[in-house]
Length: 166
Figure 1 (tube, rainbow, N blue to C red):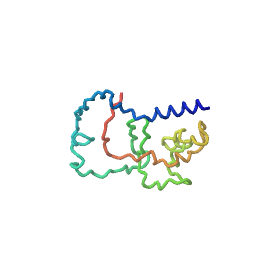
Figure 2: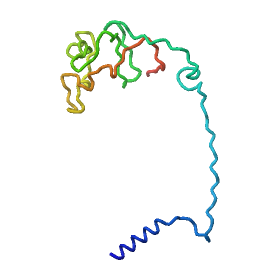
Figure 3: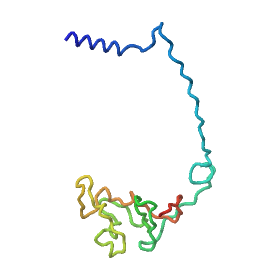
């Protein structure tokens, strides 16, 4: 027990030493000061998708959403396979989406979508990943019920970035 206590005290004493050289010891080698590296700056006029700085941009035209009825507009291909498709028709008169009523499902429900000429809700929207992972239910799960959380209405604007496809 005494030996263990002695070793512990010795370890603490050695660990707490300042590490400074003895007054009579050699001076540590002087390190050269680091040289500052040249930083390449990018002018504000070269940052972003538009020419000029943010303060030099002209007023933008308001975005015009499609006002066409369902089935009257061509669906744009998403720029990436991971993007959700846009809504190619007007959503103004569809009303709010609530837990008890989802006007999108009047046409896009998997049971009637083909008959309506609409894209059916995919099976992934009927999977409850929290409570029953791997299972596919009969109805859209609560986490996927509000369609406009991911899907936005298509506009008549041109994309800011053009994606080339192979």
